[in-house]
Amino acid sequence: MKKLVALFLIVLSFSIYAQQTQLKIGYVDSEVILAQFPEAIKAKSDLEGMVAKWRKDLDSMQTDLQKLYADYQKLAQDKNAKQDDIQKSQKNVVDKEQRAQQFQQSKFAQPNGEYFVRQEQLMKPVKEKIFKAIDEVSNSEAMQFVFDKAGDVVLLKADAQYDITFKVLDLLKRGKK
Image 1: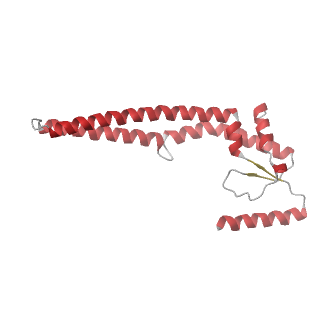
Image 2: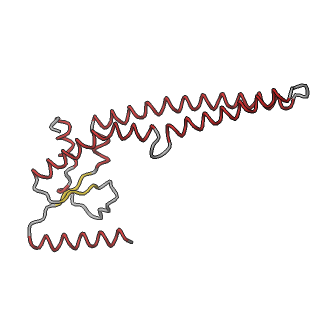
Image 3: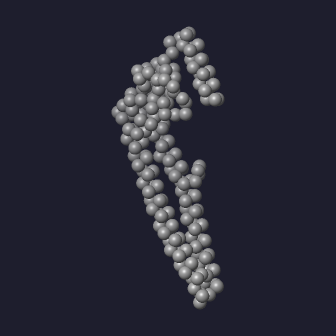
């Protein structure tokens, strides 16, 4: 409801402003840009490569944990097993489980997990280039406002003639960042 009221106020202010001057508005689809911009594709691929390695490591830890747990269960059921050996085996299982959880937390916990830190490091320069290209295209087209069709701002109607997505993408691909 708050977004709807905010959008209404924005549209109302645009219409008042547009009556006074020629208002030019454009929009981009950042999802299209991120899907087609080579630097964004490479950053995403690099991140996915890291995630695949981490998942492989985590799977290996889980496999080891399952083996340790099976060994512990066998030992616990063995009537000839020493209590000390059973406790050591149980401690090994608990320690391995904690290490696996810590590994998972260190890699994937929000917002400080390595995944999110690396994502920010890889995507920050890409986003800066995209914003610079959007600024350049919108300035050359004399646009006062540019919306992101893929973002949180609700864009209820958009005429394709105001879509500058591919102009931005062309500018990025030509290398004028």
